[in-house]
Amino acid sequence: MGSRIYKGEFGYINYRKKIAIIRTAICLLIAVGLYVAGLIIWESQKNVLSIVAALGCLPTGWSAVNLIMLLKAGFCSEEDHTKIEAHKGGLLIHYDHVITSYETNYNINASTVVDKNICLYTSDKRMEIADCEKHVRKMISQSGYSSYSIKIFTDIDKFCERLDQLEKLRSEHGIDPQAIEDAWVPGTVQTAASVLLSISL
Image (cartoon, rainbow, N blue to C red; front, side, top):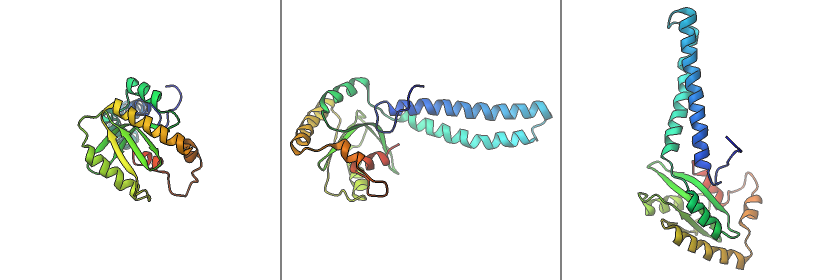
């Protein structure tokens, strides 16, 4: 499986998919195994192992639903990741997060936050950009970030151009995005970048 990949890191969605596949397969095998063992031992469906097997279907079902959601989730390609890394400079980039809402899920391949600017990139051509920007604005406003500019790009080159602009801004103002995240104290208001991750799969 390799080392663990955390939310916001490149490859997170694919990592979660692998975990979900393995977890679902194990749960299913255990449930089926218990059921078959009960039939062999008691030669009847009415036995304690059959009951345990039936209860085992609950975590199996939950895991399967989680897997289906992940299979539908978008993620950053190797090509786009290489381009972004070449333009990020000292910016903090979060990758592979699917922003959730009651109506739909929004596939965000990459995002960065610097000096009241939230910049996101998606390769999902079906996404309703205005709806996603509205949802992000609503969610971060709940944490007090009401004056932030939010822009979602669907063109990787234009996104990288914006990263160049934000890196210049970051450098001129001496902003260290990673230090801002590291300085966060549990129990206090989350940073804007953390809020984006917290509302994502």
